[in-house]
Length: 338
Image (cartoon, rainbow, N blue to C red; front, side, top):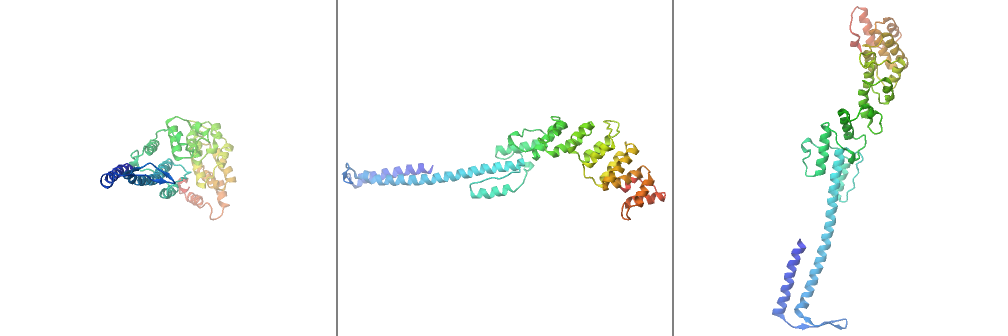
């Protein structure tokens, strides 16, 4: 734009110089010897105009050169701006492998900050920016947060990505995929999602299917299994040996074992329950409290007394207190001492 203005002004100036020399200085012509060659004669006014024109050409070349440099620099900033937007979208999408390379110094600083930053769009900003790509990303995030299912394939997100996990969870809750669809494809779905749906799966699945996917067993799913033993609906009949295998897969605390015994008290045959926790206590020190809890709950006081008498003075103080209260004819629910 400035070159066009400069050219217009320069042409007017060149014409005026030529006209002034021709009209007011001289209308003569002269020839020039150039390396022994005599050139045709030209008007002196034209010879005056030629250097001025050459100066104009030189300045145009100079201006064009620096204009081109500015153009290249501007393109670098434009490309870095696009990279910055892509980096922000990667953060919104929860991509972990963030590493952006910027050409300009100022954007290099911003890129370094973004590569080591995690942030999330504010609800007020959703689909309200000047960039359509970011608006699309934020609309996608909003849809997933609202339990809708969206297409994430084009973003190439890994299975452990939080948006992917929530999107698959939405698919599961809407019935697009079943718990077994997820459990039989552990490489396709994140383990946390497999563990989550396994809790639902064990509520109705047969025992052979529960064992098939027991790698996703947790304390929560174990307790769901225990509630089904001899229950009125979705009944499970499991031997102590099979139950012990499930217990052994988890690192349970003494409180967890007691809770398991409390759950089984509703439906398991007393003899089987007592034998189960006796066996567990032989291998797992944390299960001894649950065995004592089971004995007192079933009013099997003789074996409980034997264990307490052979224990250290600082061991099982809650059960010793419970026994002392019973001996004083003070009857309390055993659950108060767990």
